[in-house]
Amino acid sequence: HAGWAQALDKDFPDQKGVGVVGQIIPWNFPLLMLAWKIAPALAAGCTVVLKPAEFTPLTAILFAEICERSGVPKGVVNIVQGGPEAGAAIVNHPGVQKIAFTGSSEVGKIIRKATAGSGKKLSLELGGKSAFVVFEDADLDSAVEGLVDGIWFNQGQVCCAGSRLLVQEGVAEAFIAKVKTRMS
Image (tube, rainbow, N blue to C red; front, side, top):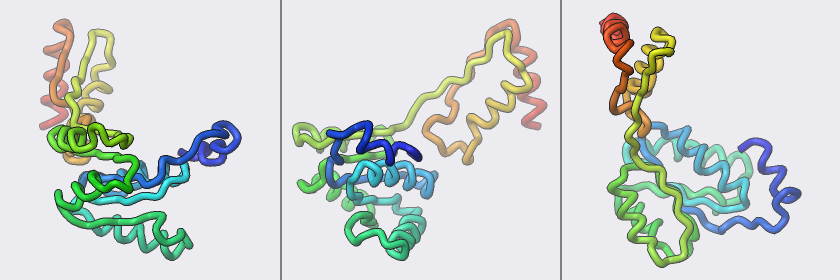
């Protein structure tokens, strides 16, 4: 997002922030997800109401304290703690113009239904099914490392973690042998 904040007025003269953005983030990357949600909203001139996961609230609390000490005006960055009820209150609040949610597909569907017809803008980053594909011309050693990183990065707690492996027949035996060696 660096660089875009300065370009907003010049390159997008008629662009306005949407207003209050409700943001709900998961537990697996508490600081990264907070930054990915809050930074673009603030750069676009919006205020934020962020609900961190119930299991990882301290990162958001510390971030709010840093904002306060840094002179961010009160009410620009707001942190709401709680479970599903707190998330539902943000999603259903009439003063929230946009919802940005990262989490399960199940909850994403609930949010979509709750916002249908409301005029609220909606961004959903939901669980994925990611295939890891290895072709005959692949560098098999690099592919093994990519496979290991793709499934076990952050202990596998990533929505894009590999969920299946597809290997071209001509290299399948050699690739599987290399994976077994790497994992032993």
